Each structure stands twice: as C-alpha cells, then as structure tokens.
Length: 171
Image (cartoon, one colour):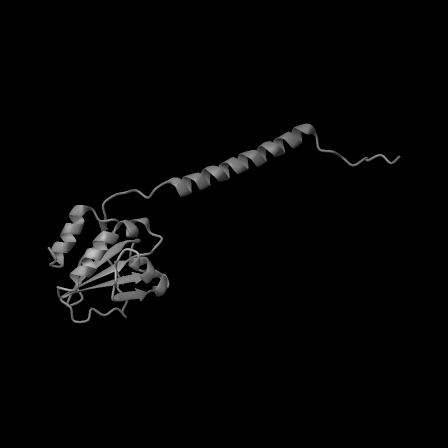
C-alpha cells in the first residue's frame, strides 16, 4: 500500500481561507446591494453652464426659441419627465418653438421609447457622447440668436416646469 506523504494544510489555515472567502463574498454582495438599490437623490434640477453642450450640427431652424433635451431611455428621471416633454412637443405645434431630443442611443430605439409615452418628436439627433452636460435629463433653452436662456440638469420640479413653460411662451 502506498501512503500519501504530501503535506496537508493545517486545519487552522483551511478555516482562515474559508473565512476569507466568505468575507470577500459578503463584501461584494454589500457593494452590489448598495450600488443597485440606492435611488438617485430626488432633488430639484440645478442650473449649469452648457459649455459646448449644443452640437454644431444642431440647427435652431429660424425658430424664436429652441429647447434641447438631453435624454436616455435608461434614465429614470427622463422617464419621470415624459409628461412634461410631451407638453413641450405638443406646444411646438402652436408656437414659434422647436424641441430637439439629443441622445447617445440608436435613434430608432429612442424614438420607440418616446412613442411609448405618446411623443412624436420631429427632431431627434444621435450624439456620439454627451459633452458639456452634467447628466441626463438636461434641458437647454436657446433663443433665435443661439444664446442660452436657461439650462437645467436633473428632474425638474413643478415650479421649474412652469418656469420653462413661461420662458418659452407656452403658459
């Protein structure tokens, strides 16, 4: 009979390794749980300076006012804002106003997303990346001379939505 003479780890070392594996798994689970269960803070939208946010290829098309909305279908605050965006787009039919949605998604996918909320936006532009904005949703109001009137990033409060409607002449 051949006897196995290879060294065996001590039982204390085996227990330490098991505890390290358990502790590592627990830490990973805690990090994942915190990352994916913590909602984004629901604070009012903040103003920002939209440096180079509006792409050179975007045209205001001779309108007195233009609203650029930076959005993404995976953005919870964008989805929460859909009733307001629908009111903006509906307002373009009766005012000297244009609304352009800017996204980094495929335009077809993004149009389907808008359509699910009853928004038939005539102006949707795909960007390679969002630049000059702090995140989505972001909204930039531009006058006919391409001067920024107001820019807001984040979920708009009811008061901020009213302010935007006043600034673009829909109230």
